[in-house]
Length: 347
Image (tube, rainbow, N blue to C red; front, side, top):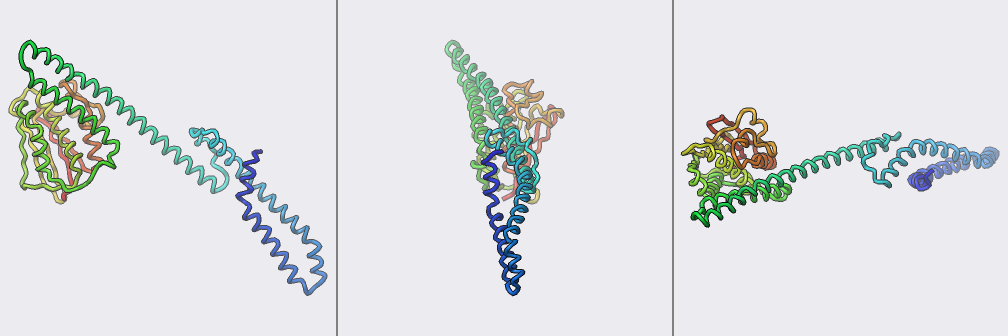
């Protein structure tokens, strides 16, 4: 028998053991006082007071023994788990006999299952992070190698600055993608909902990429019935989302052997909701790929046809919009283009 466990058992029951003897003493005292008018009865009570205390103690010990055999198995197993740190064996812990033990057992099992779930989520996120880093490093090797080759050609054939600039933009986009994925881990500490003018945000993003639009002969167009469209969102994260969608349109449409392509950004209002639809005239997404476009690392049939597909951009877009509580809808027709709609609460 574990002495420390036995001491713990009795220490927790000291108050009601004391209360039991105080109650027994009070009963005997009341009996003696009430029988003081009859000396024979008083003498009888005094003679048997010791026996009454002994019987009371026997009853108390029987109750304590019964409770001990209910309390000890669960407590002993729990103490062993705590001492040995075998947390994975918590499901093997007996449910216990008392209501208190059953509640403790239920709480421990729930905590264990929660910790297992959290651990699996962490492992999945960590694996996804490693997969992304491996893919990203592989993707970054391509533009670096291209720049190295262009520099060598420039020495012998003349200037290749425009192509070098194009490869440098790919590196910058890749670096930005890594930074955004790292920031996403602490999203709750890195966002601020405020009034944002979507028209101004679109203009800023288009101006920032105007060299790419010119190079790929891509013509952006904003269709808005009003000069200002205020919505409630986070300016930085929303800018990242829109930029990723525009980046995808540029990436795929520029490789689709089409000229004079348009990128249309249309703003519409439905009640208290503002809808931003970004339409391109790229290769489109096949019907069988539509259900998986937000899965990490999924590139689908377009990823096999066109270069530089990572399958990360739309995954991050979906993750950010879920945290911002904005809906996203995608419609696409192969050979005609893709329309991505984001729904915002109006300011």
